[in-house]
Amino acid sequence: MSYCRVCKKSFGGNFDFANDNKVSSRVVRIPPDKIISQPSSVRRLAMAYRSMNLPRRKVIDFVAGHLFLHENGVLHHGAHVCFEGDLDDIFGMERDPSGRWMGDFLNFAVEPPRQQAQQRVLERLTLLWTALAIHSPAQAEHVIR
Image (cartoon, rainbow, N blue to C red):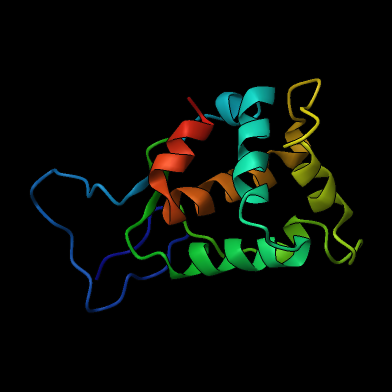
């Protein structure tokens, strides 16, 4: 039986490793934190989400729907990543049900950030970018160019 090296959970009986050393083109490779946290990347990411015309709460539903239903794998620093966290907790919706952080993030599409993103919001930005990469790989590549 095969196990994930990150979360140590079993892949199940109907999963087997390919022995061809080729990684699927649908595998999402998360860029380094330094790239995602750049003001230009944050602005383009906000522009991508703002163009979807989703309410603040629906953005988190969009992220959850894409992260938890993606079957082709996500790699971060070369390691397989499993998403198990509570997105409401990660995005601060428990403390702020109105989604003020998400509203402020979406406003970066109009008013660009003045500095690099702080470490404490990097996980949120990474999840937003990953969901976008699953939904529209070309648009996600444009965000980090």
